[in-house]
Amino acid sequence: MVDVAAAPRAPVTPRRRRDWTPELLSLPALVAILAVMGFPLLYLGWMSLHRWSLVGFDPPRFVGLGNFAQLVQDERFVEALGRTFWFTALGLVSNLPLGLGIALLMHERFPGRSLCRALLILPMVATPAAMGLVWVIMLDPTLGIVRYLLGAIGIDHPPLWLSDPDLVVPTLVAVDAWMWTPMVALICIAGLAALPPEPFEAALVDGASALQRFRYLTLPMMLPTLMVAAMLRVMDLLKLIDIVYVMTGGGPGHLSETINLYNYLAALSYDKIGYGSAIALVLFAIVIACTLVLIRLRRPAS
Amino acid sequence: MRRRLSPQRRRRLGFAVAGWTVTFLLVAPFLWMVLGSFKTTVDFLAFPPVFVFAPTLDNYRQVLADNSFLHYTLNSTIVAAGATALGLLLGIPAAYALARWRRTGIGVVLLLARMAPGIAFLIPLFVMFLELQLVGSYVSLIASHLIFTLPLTVWMMIGFIEAVPIEIEKAALIDGCSLVGVLLRIIVPLTAQGIAATGILAFIASWNNFLFALVLANEKTKTLPVAVLGYIGYNSIQWGTLMAAATFITLPVLVLALCVQRYIVRGLVAGAVTG
Image: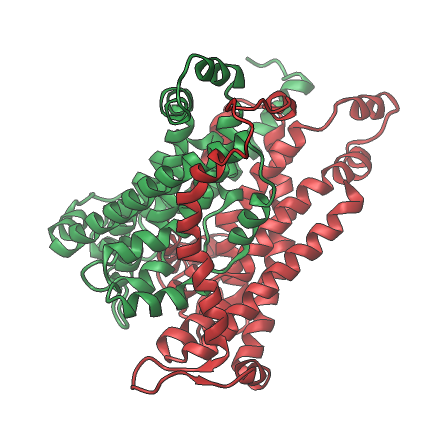
């Protein structure tokens, strides 16, 4: 793979003039991308500057940056924004250590290891909407298996999980972690496999303990890998919607409403197309900004 | 028998126990789902939950007897197959061009597509499809699913095509084969496995997608992830049928995913637009 990339590219056609073949080959894809992504994004920008509802016959009314100004005063938006960051922070602090832990475990040799690794992919490929509902049943406060298991270890009065105002966000984060921690683990497994063995051998000769080897070798050498995993998780956590929609619908009240869910509701349920477009642009900008920050953070480490 | 295990074997045994426990915990929700799909309502309402019971197929009968559920299955299949096929058709030539004549900038576009929230495309697409009177059509669903199947295909296929030795193509060109011929007779056959893996990943991404169908589908064209919501009502949850429906939806995906497990992470990095 690398060799091909490094080889000087031979002129594929004997003619001297500009070779348009690559452009022609990618033209259909380019047209499709412009049609379903490029143009809609431009349209989104235009809509964000207008007040517009689809029901009724009023044409879109130009309001300049009015929609964006309104965002700042929209308490529900501000709260959803803060909550989304809370989701993201909780997701990161749970997924990364757990994922690295699972990866360290799966890095060791034991019988059935490859089967375990294969099974790790299941939570992240299962249909999130369906699995979210399965979790609703498992978390049921009266009949759920979770209540039973907690009772078995002596916790007789477990919380209401999804109906508890304080616990609804951590509970959703836990379900999200069930889906996506294995992905972090798989990324870390690949990272661990790529680490050079020499430093570890040297440390072993020098009598470093397992904890020291982890603290001074594995962890710093795994930082770039963890950053990649963090970046992917941040991108998806900031956009979290599927499981929230099916498991709580944003409730109780709006206490688990993420920015993406509010965005969907504002634009398509409350029919505020222009306002919803403004939220979507802000959300997009936030995802880009957070990703760029993480890319920056990654640079000195690698 | 009585002899003590050597420290090294004990270590391995410890890792095996820990590794299998973690794996079991991650897989347990699936087991509970499948188990629940065979329970009668009475068994479902038992507390403490029963683990051994007389299994019933009633839940599956109920799900499959519901004509609309089979119709939603057909919808999901049509949309996922369409979006996958179109993604491959458009994506493979583009990936070939990008792999052989490097064009920088594609990485940025792919990254942007990965970062973009689905709703940013959905709002304008909804309005556009409304104008074109296409909301609720398969066309709108398949076209919108290209938003993730196409970048995924291009991203995956660049890797597979770069692994094909360029010398074969040069030889074919010297022998007078056209570029399209090279693509069809050399690249496609030599990356067949990669195409299959890419296709499966795109299919899974499309099959699982919830938000796009929620916005763009109507009662007639809605796909399974949206349809499954119908089993949760305000007051009553038909637990057994919900578990059967969830099993029915996820099982094909799990089987497909295990076939391409090596490529799953690469596919997820390229990423379905999840929300």
